[in-house]
Image (cartoon, rainbow, N blue to C red):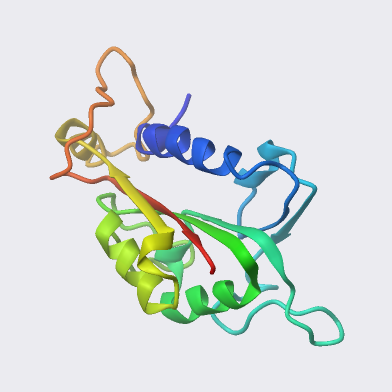
Length: 185
């Protein structure tokens, strides 16, 4: 059964990503969510072997790897230096490349191995702007509601979606998660 926290984010984000097409060279930071899209190339960079906070990922000769799309699903809240990591991602994007990021806002502390930050859609936009993305090249959204917030307080976490009791209506005053797509110009 799907996590209540990720249903709206997943639907909207799949639409954003599919709109880019599949003829893309893609990297994913510490995840495997992007495997479902059938991109031209798809590469995973998992921590601790690759630390996006340290430097942009480089090949054996030291050249920064370049991608059309970089994905980060539920990773940035675990980073000690998310601004540096976002700058490193921007350096790894080809001109016209995209960065998709999804993060929690109102969920319990979950150290894996640490838990450091939370962002709303506006907070993600600000992060992306401060790291060099143009404001008019960012689309950020958020989803949540009070029922989902209460479900996130249950002992069994994360809450599993139950259509009989869980509304997917959005209350902009109660974000559970946020996501954004930024384009490098």
